[in-house]
Image 1 (spheres, chains in turn green, brown):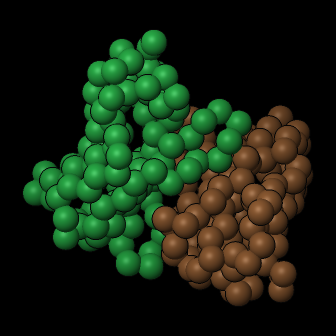
Image 2 (image 1 turned 180 degrees about the horizontal axis):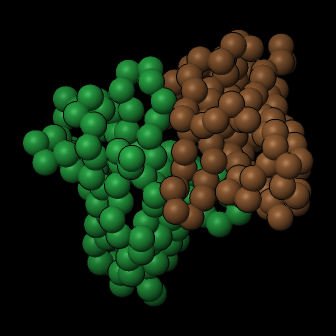
Image 3 (image 1 turned 90 degrees about the vertical axis):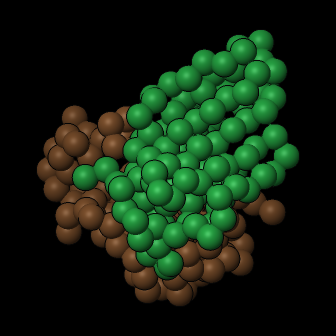
Length: 111
Length: 114
């Protein structure tokens, strides 16, 4: 039972354009959402997060949007750079409970 | 500051064997979490240890166990290995329990079960 779903296994974007990575969740108890980036042969690194009391959080080129009614969040990267090419994981949690991860989306930014 | 280290980095075992993986957290970090990454399931949480006590556990069978030592180093053990246990096992440390924003992952141990 996949409570956090990333339905696009891969995404290709031209350098300088916007990358939009999507994530859907089924558990309405989730109150905190995170995005991680993972390069090959390395562990994931925390990228950005959002609390359920907000609908948008921005950090430089990265913005996360949360639509609670649709149980959907997205990560926008503007402008996309070749160094952004990685696997992006969406994750969600409730309080001190365990984090539930999605299956990941592989982003390729084409120079 | 040294990062999270995991040993060994690669491991090949056969079905029915057992395996122990090791994780050394960042100095000063007291929480260690373990994850299993597979292509079909993505990252799945195994368990979290804080101050030598298991604080959270994912939905894995009892064949998967772990422990944490007084120096915060952690080990994960899988007994009676199955083919489906082939995966990348990631360890992550953070200063406190549940602190995902300040969680740092190790490079992982890739386990292949034949």
